[in-house]
Structures are given as C-alpha cells and as structure tokens.
Image (cartoon, rainbow, N blue to C red):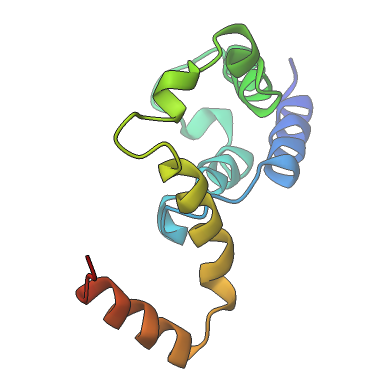
Length: 115
C-alpha cells in the first residue's frame, strides 16, 4: 500500500472515529491517528505492516468484535445493581450540559445519602 493510500485510510478513520467521553483529550485515539498521518515511514523506528493496523482499526470501528463476541446480559446487568450501566450512560449524556449550579447540587447529592 502506498503512503498516500495509508494516509487516506488514517484520515478516514480519524473522521469516523467516535469521541471518547471518559478519557481526557491528550489520550484520545484521534491523537494516535493524527501522528500516523503526519509521520513519514522513514521516521519510524522499524518498518511495520500498517495495512494490518488499518484493517484492525476498521474492524473496531464497525463493532465486528462486539457482534462476534457479544457481552453476556449478566455482565451488563449485575445482580447487585441491574441499572448501573444505564445510569452511567445517562450521567455521561447529561454531564456536559450541566451548569455550575447543577454540578454543585450533584456534588452535594453525592455526599448526602438518604436511606
């Protein structure tokens, strides 16, 4: 595969890759993809087969492994708190829009537990 084709694949992956809400910006997979686009093959320490890396990234992007190896329902709904992951997802969706007052109330609510 030519360097231009490899660069085009990395650019497409960078455009399609979803943003990770849990990790900070400096650790995103997008940073790795950007570095792969910018680095010339001569600057790499050892030659490697980038086509295999690109194929693996496309498989991850298409959720091929999730379809082939589905996560058991018992793992996604633990007996101790079956709604844990649903609540976590809802919290991740709500957090970016929460204002200063909402963050303060959420923090206070986390400190006080009513039984």
